[in-house]
Length: 494
Image 1 (cartoon, one colour):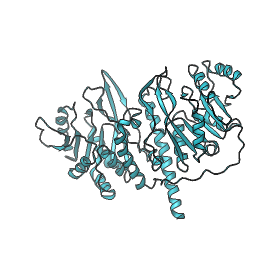
Image 2 (cartoon, one colour):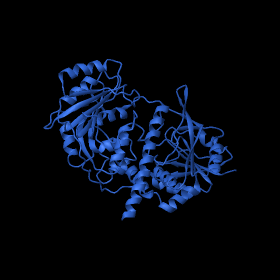
Image 3 (cartoon, rainbow, N blue to C red):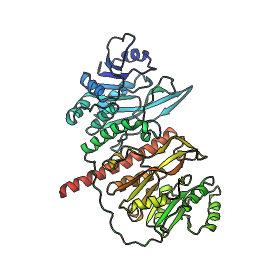
Image 4 (cartoon, rainbow, N blue to C red):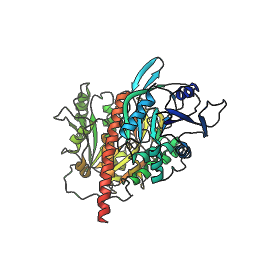
C-alpha cells in the first residue's frame, strides 16, 4: 500500500508549506507535484514543481497525467485545506473496492470559530455543469485518466477548462463515486484564498467571464458529442393544433404571500400595450399575508385580471403554472412574470409574442437585477449572451438557467406541462422544449428582477443548495438520456 498516491497541489497566495510536510508523512504518498509560477523557498524532498500560473489549464493536466507514476493521483483543490488523518486511506480503499475512476468526499468548513459540515452531491450523468462541487480532495485512478485521454485525445490548450475536460472524459468511461464522509477541513474567508471565477450566482453570465465560459462550453459540447447527446442546430416545426383560446396572450403570475410586491407586478402586466387581446392570470396559492385581498381590490377595476385559487393545497410554482396554462382563461401564448418582479416597459408582451409568432416554442428576454427599491445592482443586465442559435440548446445542459422573462406557445406547453416544484420548474421546461423546438432570444432588458430576502434562492443553506443542484442535475440526466434516445432513433431512420 505504500507510495500509491501522487499528490497534485496548487501553490496559491495563502498556501501554507506545512501542508506539504503533513502530506509527505502519510505512507501512501510517494511524491507531490506542485503547480506554481515561482518558488522562493526550497521544496521538501519528493516534491517537484510544474511551472504554471493556473492549475486549471489543459497543458498542466496533460503534463500531470503524463508524469504521475503512482496508481492514483490526489488533486487537492486550491484553498486552505487540512485533510483528515485517514482521508487518503479512505479514498484509496473506496476507489479500489468500487473500481471507480474518481472518488471524492464531503468536508467541513471553518469560518471564524464556527465549524459546519459541508456535504456534497452524488455525481449523475447529468452533472455536466462546470461548477460541480467535488470537495477539496479528489482521488483519480491514473490508469482511468490515461485511458480517457488515449480514447478521446489530449486535453485541448484550454486556459481554464483543463480539469473540467479531464473529469468529463473520465466520467464518459468510469464511475465518479461520492463517499459521504467528511474527510477534510476547509478554512473559509481566508484573506489570501482565491475564488473560482464561476462561484457566484450570476458569474456565468457576467461579461467579464465570457472567454472562460466559451472554453467551458467547448469542453461540455465535446462531451455531449462523445456520449451521443449533442443536438445539431436543426429544430422541428411547431405542430398545428386546433384549440380555442379566449385571448391571444396571457401573463401568468403564480403568487404566495407577496403582499409587498404583487400589486406592482400585476399593474406592470396590465399596463402592457399590444394590438391583440390579452389577460393577466394570477394563481393565488393560498396566501395568508393579505395578498388575496389586494388581488380582489385590483380585480374590481380590471376585468382582464383573472384570479385562480387551486383546489389543491400541495402545489408549488410549477403546479400553479399548470393551473393557469390548462385553464379556460389561458391565451394562445403564456408569458411569465414573477410576483416580485416587473416588466421594464409597456411593449414587453408585444415583443415576446411577436417573437413566438415567428415559429418559436419558447421566447426568452433579458433582465436587469435590481434591489427592493428597483435600483440596479451588479452585475446589472443579465442577457445570457452565451446562448447561440448554433449551440444554445446544448450549452443549456451546462449552465443553470435560460433567463427571463419566458414566453411559451401554449399548445406546445400543454403537451409538456410543468413539474410541481418550486425551483427549477422553468429550467425543466426549457430543456424539454429546446430538445425539439426553436428558442428565440431578445438581448436587451425587458424585465426588472428584484433580488431581496424573499427570493427562493436567497441565502441558501448548504442543504438547500445541494437539493436544488441535485434536482437540476437529475433534470439534465433525464434530458441527456432523452437526447441520446432521440439521436439513436433518428440515426436509424437516416
